[in-house]
Length: 360
Image 1: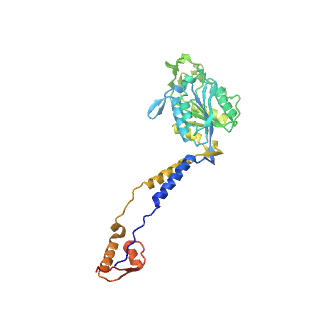
Image 2: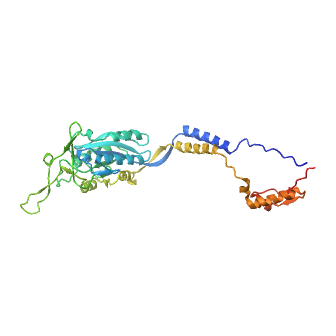
Image 3: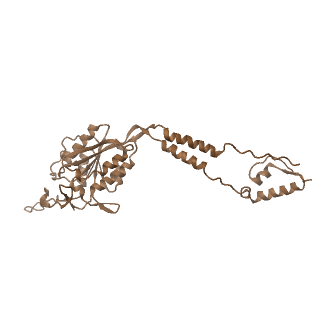
């Protein structure tokens, strides 16, 4: 009689069961794991949008479509908001006449992301309470004062096309009430370089044509080319980004200047390391546990892949194994060494005899 073959004992706890237990533990962690406090960089800004009528000029392109400067600035801010690290705080302010009005104090961007987006979409020219635009003599001072009152190293981002209405005399260069270096920030220029008509808005908020030269305050912009010739008059009914003027203002108040060539330019400015603050930030890592739990569940329900035996041992190994079986059927004992067995089946066998008796 041949040796009795013991039936294989099924494994009670295999890799699938271990993966399932791990998935349950990770899901529990994803539900109840507290936030972890880490030292991270954060940014605090009050973003002030110029909502005067020149910001309604449609001379910039967004996704292949001509759009207004204000709409372009909002789109750039949406992109920047998405890129801000958790722990950063952003607030909204609007400017017209000679005042920046705080709409929303800075709030944490991740916790209040939806509220920030919803309030950002509501910023438009209907909030305007006057048609004047005094950026240097009022707007910047008001925005800087807001940031100082908020404190906590809050910086200012002032988005504008730089058009003053009435125009500021070239001889006036003072900035009353502003001390350079008190508050840091950015002047962001937006708009095209070619002068374009300024849309006029009625009291009901609807378009009412364009401003005419006779309806706006003009100023002598250039001295006459020759004695006796009439002085050149500015065209304040037309608007373009006043980049040189904004660069001069930014240098006077210690701000940086950035032109909004693309929507991403605003996010790049806001993430400048000069405005970063190292602070302890509560970081939510539950998503890591959730992803790991999904991976464990995938392993649990993954179908078992069976590899054919001939493919596992190879053709050469199959021939050696067949020779050994044939020899054993003749009643001869075949010694199989460790090296031969390994080369035959690609895994070590214990050295011994393969022996089989003929049925009587």
